[in-house]
Length: 227
Length: 227
DNA sequence: TCCCGCAATAATGTATACATCAATTCCAAA
DNA sequence: TTTGGAATTGATGTATACATTATTGCGGGA
Image (tube, rainbow over all chains, first blue to last red; front, side):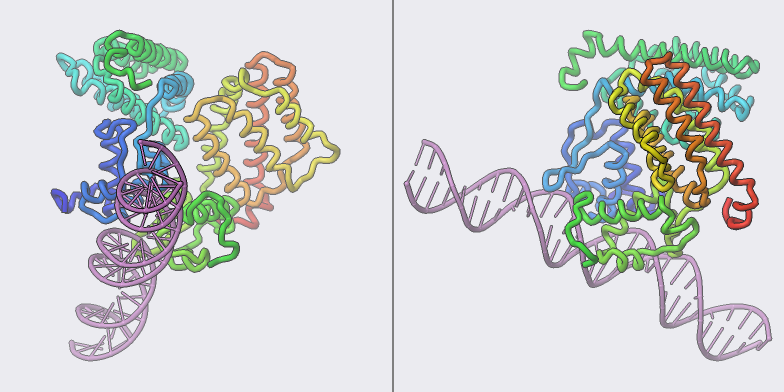
């Protein structure tokens, strides 16, 4: 009933609603604190309450929505603590994950990722996507579902935080240089600890950049509400 | 309609069904491979399909059930790979988690856990519960929701594996001795790396014990189907 | 006997009706 | 004017009816 009828994202309206809502929540089309309710959502998607409810149930379990009975459905807030936890986790786990992944990395894929970085000028608008692509590729090769699952969720949350707080001005060239260093190290076949150290350094740079942003006048101006 | 009407486990029949099903899946009352369907479940719980569906949807997302459209709902299998992943994750993450938790550990709680171990004879039937209690207490104090969430899921899976494979004969005294060593080290306020090393050693013991069990004639006899 | 096809069945997917409950509003009485 | 309370509203919780579809089984024809 909405637009194109058979998108087949994942079969079933439940999955369509879930995927679309998840995407909108991560991209902050529905900002933290927004109040929704089932009726609104059924009208937006042109489906009945059943698929909406199932999608909402899943998103509540994932922590993006909170259902208050007889009150409404609320988009969960983001806190500075949350951002700190994300970086703490990345600092502690990602270097480890990289070491686990090394035996399974495909050199061709690493080269492809590197070429993406150095293909002429870096495009700012896709820089964040490319950034995540490298991290997620490495993580997925660690062959441990528990860690992969945690890290994929973490990167979703990270994206949501980045968008919610408006830190679009990531230092793309600095990050790209560090990415290149990591990829080169992996391609050369350096000692795992060496590669992991480069990854740790990179994440520390990211964290410093994010925390600096949260203390900047620019941020404090626009987001007296958040964090 | 079933038995006691107002159990209030978590408000809502959805939560009642979810909690009960989760418990039964972890305890392998529904063994891996079992085929269920919504109708059966509605009859078992005496509720309509709606709460059943919502519970099933959640359990499918958690990986305990798999819904095959127009076929049935199947209890997911357990593989040896899964067991290996569990121990790999514990070996890599739990010592780290312990170090993160140290500043937040409550000495009184550590002493309480230790007294539990040394109170006369160790009761075999509750040994596994007590074992998990210590690990989960430490993990929860690490104050990182991503890691806590992952590890709680992992311990649920671990319990399910232990029960499914029937390794009730955990070496309770050996495990208890290692637990005591860890707790003593924490209570003394040893260096974090020292404590973490004890934890790692303990998990290695657990893994060795589990893997030995999987190679034992006793296991191979009873479980030609599994793993 | 074997095979093709249609129909019945049984399962999930979806929509909607009904139940419940909390918050709000509005009216009446002090 | 203020306040208490009952009724209405609006939200989710639950049950059920309806739609869709894959599977299965039966039956007729080659």
